[in-house]
Length: 176
Image (cartoon, rainbow, N blue to C red; front, side, top):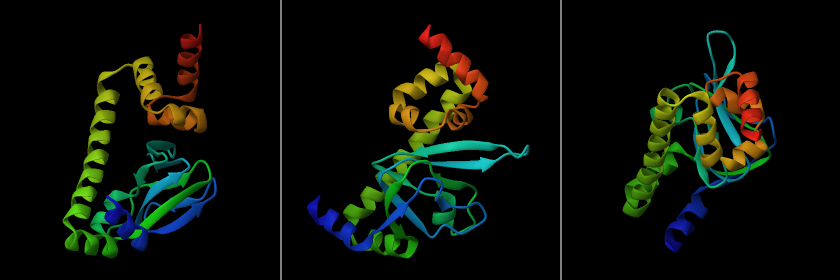
């Protein structure tokens, strides 16, 4: 693993974001993906009513990116914005592909990272479809305790498919 860490250190560059800074913007090409060292970001889209719909949270020790844009080399479908100050280690598409082609271990590491992203999206979709609002929030509290502490209520509510007022009521019920 040390050899891989050394290769990654050579090819990833550090990017610092302040709260409110964008890592990706809808309609623009996302040329890099990143590994979040510290901080919290969220991805979102604007729905047909003009409202923000949070689609993901990116915490420390996770990969972050507008994956459709990065891997398909197409305009991004979403925005990614820092909620807190963050430090990411980023890599561009061509460099990543070159590393994947020369080192099987790095290729496997990349595949495992993408598998985690896919599994996480599948789990969230299942929870959104099968659980009621209270159960979704309880699941979220268990899975994302750091996000509960750092993200605004409206972003969490949006991620869970509810209005902030509904989430506030659920939170009050749980405290009682």
